[in-house]
Image: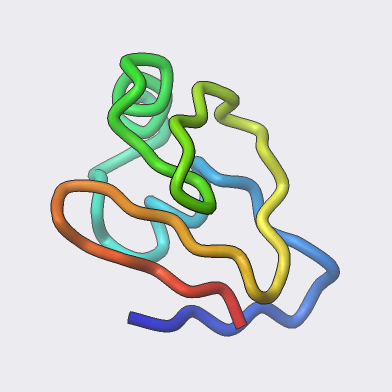
Length: 67
């Protein structure tokens, strides 16, 4: 899926929430800190990681391309 942002970036936890892959911020924090989220094909444990257009986030078999 693609997610269009209109600011300079979106934080990783927010991206997972707005795309419906987690229910809330607490769940986002949990899955990110557990190393279950890939950011540009590498494990990312930083909930506040800034995602920019062109970045790829993967979680639970879903891919999100930030555009």
